Amino acid sequence: MLLWFWSVTGQKKTGSMSEFWLISAPGDKENLQALERMNTVTSKSNLSYNTKFVIPDFKVGTLDSLVGLSDELGKLDAFAESLIRRMAQSVVDVMEDAKGKVQENLLANGVDLTSFVTHFEWDMAKYPAKQPLVSVVDTVAKQLAQIETDLKSRTASYNTLKTNLENLERKSMGNLFTRTLSDIVSKEDFVLDSEYLITLLVIVPKPSYTQWQKTYESLSDMVVPRSTKLLAEDNEGGLFTVTLFRKVIDDFKIKAKENKFTVREYYYDEKEIKREREEMTRLLSDKKQQYQTSCVALKKGSSTLPDHRVKVTPLGSPDRPAAGQTDRERESEGEGEGPLLRWLKVNFSEAFIAWIHIKALRVFVESVLRYGLPVNFQAVLLQPKKSSTKRLREVLNSVFRHLDQVAAASILDASVEIPGLQLNNQDYFPYVYFHIDLSLLD
Image 1 (tube, rainbow, N blue to C red):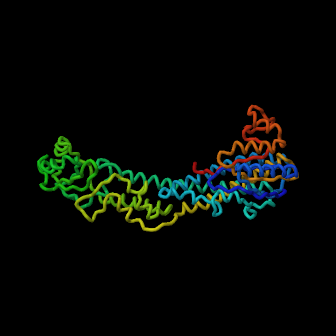
Image 2: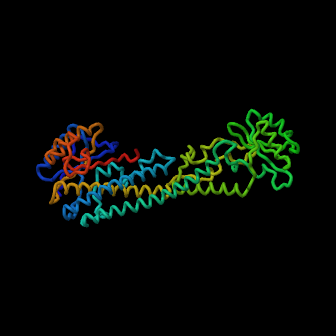
């Protein structure tokens, strides 16, 4: 293949643009002049930023063998793009406390995606060009398939862990009627292991606190005097204890309901409370190992950590932490990355690099099919300027219309059918064309 390149003058690269057009034209003298003309026009009109896109010469068999390979590469291209988009979204999901830093973690070979594409170099070590073209494509396909398999396994494990944690935390949300009380009550709040006495928990509306204090001892016979204690409050009311004889439980519940006091069915089980707390700690630890949450983000709060629970303040025990604080305070300080995020970053880079190599392979195969043997074409990468795509397309059509008059006409008239062409006319141009969109998080 003839390697051809021009210097770009009067153009400044704009990294914020994420759309690229990868095109090729025959490498003979006439078309090299056409490419020079295209570059001059786009440069003067500030339509696009243009760079060379060097593709090595591959071993080519017959043109017929390339037809099937073209179809295979088309499917592989779509698969690769879908994979890197899913991986990018997985990075978003894992970096829930630092979403603003997601883009800086989506790199290829340690550089931003735009820089990688505009400075593309074929990786001879990973994809030897001396191998048959079919073997190169097979290598890329197997690499991407393995990454997808690993992605499914790793994200499934992470999502299961996250779901279990959210389910457990959901029990810690809501009001005093529904939420778990394991982080509010303590052993000292109850009369335990008594054959005759039992401690009940009663939810009292805030406006009725005074009424409760005056009447709870007389709601039923056999209520222990001065046995009530306010354990916690939310926005609506408070959680009180009251101790009475077991034989009057039913009568007490009826009288409490008549006075709009609600007895919360709860029996203190130290083993169950310990199990629940240990499960929460384990899940938080496992999740943190997958993605280390920075201490700064922790202080600001997280959508999955207990900071966003309905505020419930325990009372009467200064040593007892507020609801939702125990697990958070157990978390160690510091920043870092867990294995899932590290794996995503490394393999996103690998998948993205593979994807751009697939684009190069598609340009090579399509150019040979279009322009024939021996291999002689020039590939160019165009980065359209904002709001210039229509004009840029007109320039390209004008410069290269001689390559395929029917295709050029079809651009002007979408109703024109190109015999033997399966693509939509809007995707077919006189020159070889492939689109690259780096807006992976849109």
